[in-house]
Amino acid sequence: MPFGSFAFVVFLVLFFIATFSSSLSLLETAVAPFIERLESRTLATWVIGGVGLLIAIPAALSFGPWSGFTIFGLTIFESIDYVTSNIILPLGALFTALFVGFRLPRKLLLEEFTKSSNLGKKSFFIWLLLLKYIAPIAILLIFLSAIGFLSF
Image 1 (tube, one colour):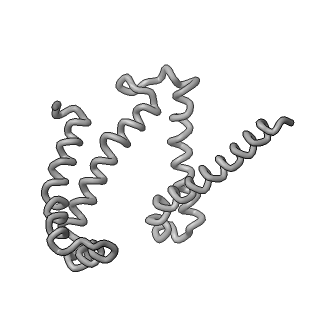
Image 2 (cartoon, one colour):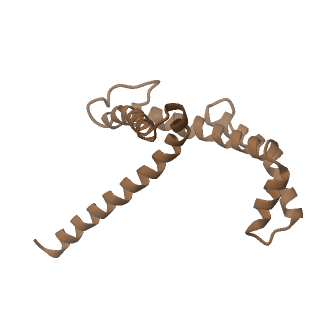
Image 3 (tube, rainbow, N blue to C red):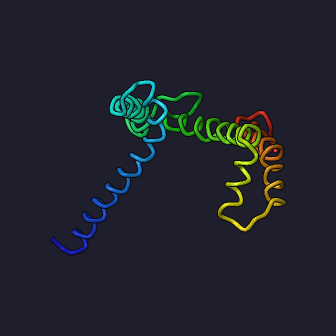
């Protein structure tokens, strides 16, 4: 076996390990909220992993046998990508900005903002103003543009 082939096999094995470990860390964020409801980390992991698999299989098949199946002119993969990129991510950003800006205690935000930086209170209040009022408007405009209600 030439060295180049061996190096390629080692690369693929290491790449698999890296992607698998990253997948586990991504799965944890989805599993954590369900652990209390299902009263078992193992059950929550299997349920969330199974749901992910049920979504991933049609998406993967849309590159082959199911490539002719479309939803509003998009393959299954493209549909999932569209919903994720243009609806879920902007709405998540909007709700995060609103929650952090309006619901978290200002004292906690100031402490976290100044803990690991040299920025002072003036910078904090500018950031908070942007987070509470400018960011939600900008995110909403981007969201409306992404789903086709606005065009720039």
